Length: 237
Image (tube, rainbow, N blue to C red; front, side):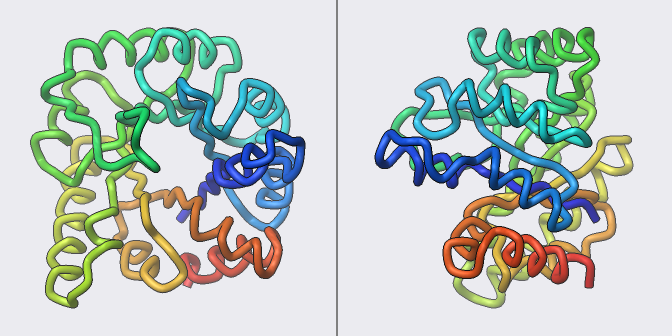
């Protein structure tokens, strides 16, 4: 299973002082050396954490795979077409949210998303859609030409009872099976940490986990290299 490390929260710490440290690019290099398969970053319209400079440099250091999370906004689309990440992950975005709160409404936005997917595919860039683990969204993603989906694991990660957690895990499993049968590359992420990641990593149809906050939080205590190595160990087991 592949591990994508999201470095947004390194940039969040830096922007707290509007300074230059810590550098998300340096964090990305350490993550790759520690076993990450790809680097993930979210270039938001309001530039609250990751900046254009970061994306430019991350493109240079993430030689194997750069995953650019983004809203389907024209300014960000144009930036992505310039830097050419291997994949863009289209996500919903609200200015007042602390973090992405849920999956795209693919059915409601299918016409717009189809056009964005075609634009990126024409430039040789794969498109993943960040969606809730729901059959309607999966079917629509395949219908409009996405190459991949990233299943939102937030409900699973935030479940407080064993029954609720198992129900959410079953939904993720069924969604992953359905998406794989439709020929989609299946990733998952949001709220995954060192205590809840293993059951999701055991879903055979999920090929990639994208994890940010928990790795960066652990890195503040033990360092970036150790934090990535620990997560790598858990998902490999």
